[in-house]
Amino acid sequence: MRISYYPGCTLKTKSKNLEDSALASMAALGVELVELQRWNCCGTVYSLADDDLVHHLAPLRNLIRAKEEGNSKVVTLCAFCYNTLQRANLLVRNDPEKRKTINSFMDEEEDYEGEVEVVHLLQVLRDDVGWEKLYEQIKLPLKGLKLAPYYGCTLLRPEEAAIDHVEQPTILLELLQTLGAEVVDFPAAAKCCGSYQIVSNPEFVVDCASNILSSALRCGAEVLVTSCPLCDFNLSQMQGELAHRDSEFREMPILYFTQLLALSLGLGPEACRFDLNYIDPRPLLKSKGLLNEKHVTAAKG
Amino acid sequence: MSGSDSEKQTKGATEGKVEEKAAVEVVEKMIPVYIMGKRYEVPEGLTIMKAMEYAGFKFIRGCGCRGGICGACATVYRKPGDYHLYVGLACQTVVEPNMYLAQIPFYPANRASYNFDELKPEPEEIFKLYPEVFRCVACNTCTKVCPMNVEVMDVIAAIKRGDIAKAAALSFDCIQCGLCASRCMGELPQYHIAQLARRLYGSKIAPRAEHLSDAVTAIEEGKFNKMLQELMRLGIEDLKILYQARELEPEMTGEDWQPADKSHLVE
Image (tube, rainbow over all chains, first blue to last red; front, side, top):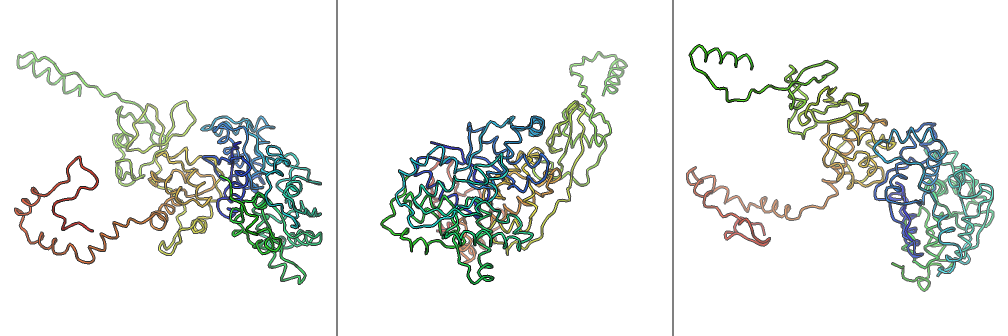
């Protein structure tokens, strides 16, 4: 199976661990993620804060690229890219006037009417691979590892762009259960990490991180699992400050779901790129016996 | 022209000879063009630059190389009944009837100051000097207005995702005319940003040519001093003889051809 893939800027720079572990694990599952030959920055959600059309050009141009390459679907990993591409797609599908204006402006591109479907990798795993088929491929069940599935905002809001129900999402929980881990559902799973406030109002992000991480800790989680480079950054970077303020605060590694997927598929810790995580998860994983050499099998392909 | 022809005829008649007019009478076709809003009649087939000079404009700057490579004569124009803006270099673009044009010889785009030697070959250095690069909304107006068909939007996209090498490769044909910056919604100086990427790539990222550094070392060690001094002592006639007698690489030969006299080669 081949699916057109939109990486986004961050996965090529700060979050290579998310991309590398995703490409490796999907290849092991027989799904080739084929990067778009030509793509540009999506605009990263913040661009859509203004009610104008020009900020929709960037994400739509990527969908036109996907269409030009003959794809009916494009998958993305970064939650922000997912959100931006999906919302731009919905605008073009639902608003004929704006669609006309945008197509008229982008006179050098073919007209786009929303023909391409935007999906997140979690949806591909659930719908195209399937939990049962995935379960059969697991070489190293993540036994004894207590994982907290953290969705953040951009996968679940706004409702029309969401991949799951905002109040009771289950898609990430289902994936992590399939991987054999003990999943700790916790109340702050869909609370905002503070997002771009890290730039202008970092104190606010300290509060957000404190709420989310202490909630997860109280429920017994050892690792927070995310799909968003900004959530990863905010929640990791604030842990130093939180430890400083609260003597009872325990450091919690943050991992991308693709890293855990790659690990459970037996691709070995190198394929997971744990070396790039802000908080090294390897000591914890080792203590759970998940980095033992005997569990490691050769990566496919 | 027609004036002088009738002069000739009169002369011929006066001298009593019948001159056969063998030459075809050439009349230049004149077409209207609008230069900065004012109408001029210029000969068909001229470039915009020559047409402007024909109309009486004198270029004392903004005319550069006249060879399509310096970017000084960037021109924006429209055609009748068409709202699109077209671009071209005045020295290369031929006038069309009712062309409506103006030149953009300079654009006050932001140009960061930096000490190049101190820059690391990392995208963050570009982001620091040109933070406006993140204002790009991928509207593609820059690409549409480039007279050299550079994919300007893709250059900026490559820089945003840290790919300096790709930005350098894509912007190779840039002639620094500034049209991209003049139309950019985000106020990016694309050509300055791309130039920094090319400089970083060429100077600090691209692999070095080892044979070049070997040759430089040989020069610095004085390998060629004696040969040069001997040549400089010779008179012009001896130099001519030597020049005619020099060994040339044959036109069709393999890569490993070597001259008989290897004294000037760098091993």
